[in-house]
Length: 538
Image (cartoon, rainbow, N blue to C red):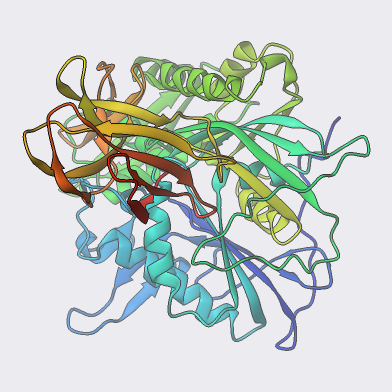
């Protein structure tokens, strides 16, 4: 089942009378903007001068041009004015990775917060596109690793936009759809972007006369997608997924530090390191060919970045990139196995994102995936195109990425433990609730607090920064639980209960917004415990 790897988006003529769907894939390096008319015509990469570099492609850059006023330059404007290397704190770049992050590392030193930079970019795109066409539906994409926090931010950003429907899809699922596979296919998607690596296994339901739709529609802000398109209904199910906040821009820093260890990695040096990485990713050059890039340091002295393809591959292996991809692969497979998946079920491997161009990545995955065929759709626009395909013609049933646990009292061991409610791989919304009985832990206990968290899988990686350099760290603890939020729901006990006494029976459910809901009864008097929302999980 071979597809055209270089398939391009058709060019159509749009005008102010056209209604349709706008898809925005906010990337660490490049943000992609695609529009599709309601009548089912092919999508179009939108040219938005002066902020676009090419049709549909906007550099993810924001520049604060005035100290006193809210005045900004966007995307290609910054490059054309040669501001990329001037007064770095006025420039915001690589901001996507920090949106939703609990801690922003010092390597991001812009005056503009990451959330503000992303908001400016989305609103700027909206302002330009909405003068050209009438947008009925806006589709946005989000990384797997910070989906929950990123989603909350997007909801707030889009509150002021006058659009009837807003949908959110995770990037790997959108990439699967962007590859253009047939219904009934099962594929592994590696999305290697500028700041994240996301991996997922996606099943496109249907095929052989089977096209039963499924209940969950990817959405946010409470807006259902109407599905009034002439496109044929196609369904997708995420069987397993995992992510890591590491990407192409981290490789640029590795290259810079490796070749110029005594130099501060300025924007100029990092851009040359990126150019070097891209040229060394050409499959047609020899492994031993050394490519040289001339750069200027902070003292305006001339320095040189010199590296071969073999040298780049050795650096990536030394930094643990391949081991990290292998761990993501194992985590994704393990989750998918809980949904009755086997590796032999894979029809294709789909590579998207700029980092997927590095030959070492494909070679390594080829060895892991044996003889499974690879698809390489246009790496930059594949996700945005897939997001369009997902709405309104596709419904997606999703799975929990990390699972969810409840902190409760263990009568046998007489201590608090984390009790798993739903494991990674659990599909949502849930078909039936999970029931659990809780006991009191103190004398005359007057309430029971519900605290939820998500397990951190042993052996998975996280990124830490040592002297500004991204470094992979393995999570060793088997029991590490991260609280999902600071909200604690307290259920009153009336009358108060004694130590070890079974007090309440709770029913937990995941609704169609991926929110954990709970309700129950007091076992001592059969009093009803009203339904409450414990917040969004993922």
